[in-house]
Image (cartoon, rainbow, N blue to C red):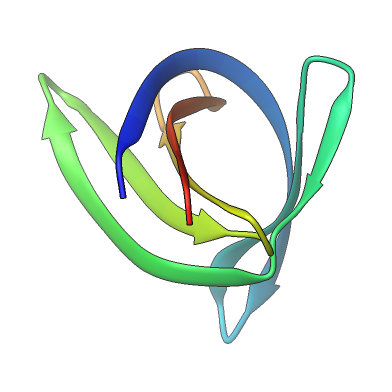
Length: 82
């Protein structure tokens, strides 16, 4: 699978399951994407900020979403075709 860098802001609908955030859907441009599976979650420090990365997928594509804790903003980092 090949990934394409996107690095654009998105709006994300998140549910909390067992006290952990789980992205359910995101809006990129004028289109909504239903998340079917959260494949991986990890965090890293970027300077003093902590960034949480969510590798998710729908029925056709895989996406990497990033939640930035300082700005409380979401970005679509990458997407790939399954």
